[in-house]
Length: 524
Ligand code: XMP
Image 1 (cartoon, rainbow, N blue to C red):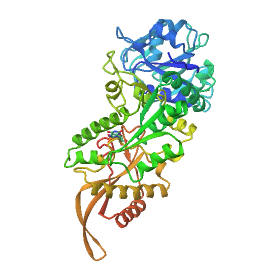
Image 2: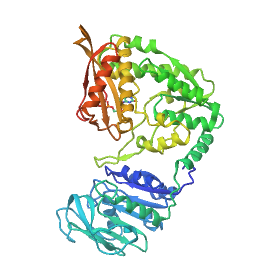
Image 3: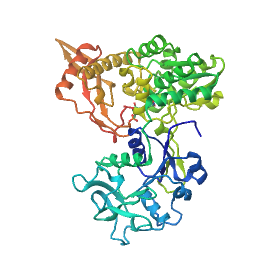
């Protein structure tokens, strides 16, 4: 177990699609929490984690099925507050002597319920402070089964038409169960329940980035000792914050490698290197390997081949430079919490899926390096807050994501230096336009793709035969799904004019209005 001194709230995950949202709500309250899949939370693990409170998530299984997931038995005698949500409420009832019925079996007046519902107050409850001020509360229900008989010691505090036991509590033991999902937006007042719950549990809300920074620095020093650490710096937020944090923790024991593969945006390399090397005094190896990458990419037009070439070369190059760093024992990576959460699989089996970060995939094993991952406990917005604490400029922290293969996947078909130069210029004008119009922070990611087609145009009295390009701008939360950004026609017109006037080699501008799915954000 780590040396965190913060009080910990444990979320036992039964496989709900929205378990991560519970963690988000709690982090917003400055409460430190961890999500653990139910299979891993044995009585021993529970004792070791020593949580100050526990939340049981929803889940796709039915407690009426034999062998379905349960909370560890010792939970009920630990003396800590427990909040069960949906499946969590149902297993709480089942384990404590109540009864749950399948959706089609009536009993206790309940039945299956999906979507919006109204909950009516039945009695006052500390968990519900601030609720029912204007009458019924809107909540989001998503359950097939329902509680048919409540466990001894529990009372009903809220009801809905299909869930007469929508809110249950045993106030003596501080056990609470809700049938709905307070963590989702469709339960507009849901955050209040979490706020009340953590207050009841005695959390003081001391999980701030300032405090986290000090703890993280201490942990890095403890882990690394006087060994040397290397870090692949991409210029993205995660690797930048990782590098800045390590630098603060171990100073000169850190060396960063920044690989310029010739596929970066205009001024990108200079901006990153000068910020870290000149302004922050980090040791940065500036690996100028443009010729190597572009040489190997010559004549390649298949998207997967291009990606594989870049990925393979990146590892070779990084390894080459890392080998020159004497005594390197650790590799730092900007792995975030959503990458490491082991989530319960929906097939119902006990398998877990762990998404691994693969910036430098396979390298640690190959080079015999151990990993330092100081952002493992953080969500993206917390990483940004930490970057702020570490003194990284706001403009840097708020940058749009930029993919590892860089402009290669924004240059469909064959990559040439000529096309890359044109693309860099067009992209710079586009981003400048977005910034000038104050839209940068509203957009999740924006870029230009240069199309593998020349079109005819007319400029002045002359005919042109130049490349067409596509502008892309999307809103998204995590890059998994995305919508195109609804620019005004004025903005699009002005931007197209500027690109055509200012960028030699482009005579036609289009706007990509594909959402994801069915499209992807990048063009390749
Ligand atoms: P797609 O195109 O798959 O992109 O919708 C989703 C998000 O992932 C980024 N992306 C990558 N990032 N290495 C990265 O580091 C990659 O190979 C890669 N491919 C896509 C993309 O920019 C978007 O933010």
